[in-house]
Length: 248
Length: 318
Ligand SMILES: Cc1cc2nc3c(=O)[nH]c(=O)nc-3n(C[C@H](O)[C@H](O)[C@H](O)COP(=O)(O)OP(=O)(O)OC[C@H]3O[C@@H](n4cnc5c(N)ncnc54)[C@H](O)[C@@H]3O)c2cc1C
Ligand SMILES: Nc1ncnc2c1ncn2[C@@H]1O[C@H](COP(=O)(O)O)[C@@H](O)[C@H]1O
Image 1: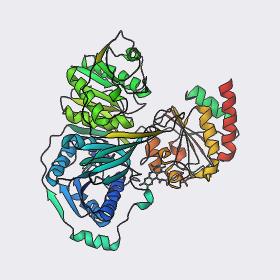
Image 2: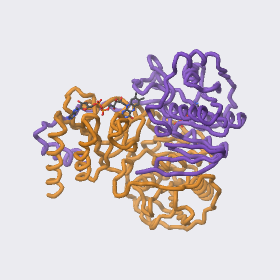
Image 3: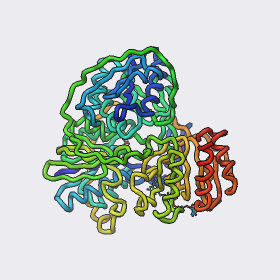
Image 4: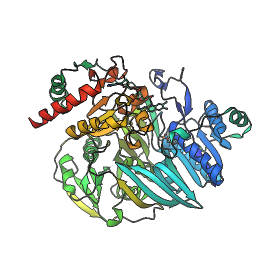
């Protein structure tokens, strides 16, 4: 089985978010970038397939040279090779078109992507990728098994889970549950050494059209101070929630 | 030209987000000087949507569409969008909305903006305000393609009545081969889900152990609320994974969010700060959550919550 894991390179979840150039650019100063948490779950599942069922695992990112340390980290976790599409990721449809070109060329069977990325939170790339490649598609996936070309997967629905059957080739939008938190891997020394020698191919974009563009950023309005209520004055809290906030 | 909204229903009944997308679609249609068309699939009574401004409803009904299937539903919305010459398609931000919308965008060659929180600030260029960086900021995004798909963030625009005399047209949508078959659905019944809830009662590691969650459930019962928890609580197995909220868990955009024994780590706050009113109960006055909250009680959950339940019961009964 040929597996492709789409990796987006995002600010660490603890990052303070600031903007520069009159609020038109994200300020990367002092920001630590990591593998998007959802993609990390997908990558770990891909490693499981590789070890238990035999598979080659390619990782791909659409981005500039600054994403390469993130890709090396994914290689150190155990992916076999990496592809970087040398384009600045501006819009979901553009990224999906670049990834679709990679998928078609590489004839992958299983494409794993995170259900959302932690930066622009598009929640769109996996679905677009499925539509562009005409692969089967399961999103919000919390479990997947592959037997030959048969796929059995579970996805989260409102208030529960749905079990689905499908077949390869397929695009999966994955999240926590596809593997458990405790099974996530941290690169070890040997992995890091090996990753240095693994192929990281930089390819030029197919130059997909850019459909959306961010004009400016804005931070949420500053919050007023919390109103503290004494622990023995619950009546006041209820009155505030009823009369002032009007939420009960 | 028209604005098409997909009004999602569950067991025939419209979800609240459906009324919100119709309200939103009406607003966008007004801005563009056109009409809003609402699409329903297997809804029992579509006329409810007239109240929110839908002049025209396209009702699709077919038992083949009883269970949601992303490719199939995506094909239906696309087919209707083309038939109605829709240049703007609006979907909600439910799990299923996010599942099918990207496919619609590809089929319509449309730019797609998700997590949109307000009506367009400008229609030419078409500019919308969206949440970004896990709710830590907003972006003003221009969609430059002729066709546009908008994913409306839940509880952002609100539900607005705008009664019109509408008409409903039945439509026979094509059945496609979706390649994915639903085998089994497991759902907790009779419980408010986090996605649907007006009020969410959430608790963290301050609750000490799973045996103490009776308190949280009782409070949720009185308020008709959904229960949620912080990430460590679900990692420890005290509560099911589906209850984990935050940046890497479920997003919460309720009217009221009550956080009990949760410190307020940045990743937790990122997922819940779209909630309108936040109440925190914590023993530690220095807990970061107090900076993000509207109302707070510095106190022990095991003393405060039972009193709160008792007082709320009296309040509800009065
Ligand atoms: C990549 C990444 C992603 C993450 N994603 C998420 C996420 O999506 N959601 C999330 O929640 N976390 C997330 N976290 C974890 C987050 O950083 C915090 O560790 C977590 O939110 C803390 O949970 P807590 O507040 O329940 O526990 P603690 O931090 O242990 O806080 C417990 C609180 O309870 C209070 N307390 C103790 N006893 C009582 C009492 N008797 N009555 C009242 N209060 C009491 C304490 O004062 C304390 O403030 C993530 C972390 C990382 C690294
Ligand atoms: N620039 C990118 N390069 C590679 N994969 C990406 C990129 N952006 C998004 N993805 C993938 O698509 C998923 C969803 O991203 P998004 O649609 O941006 O929320 C991510 O978790 C990644 O797996």
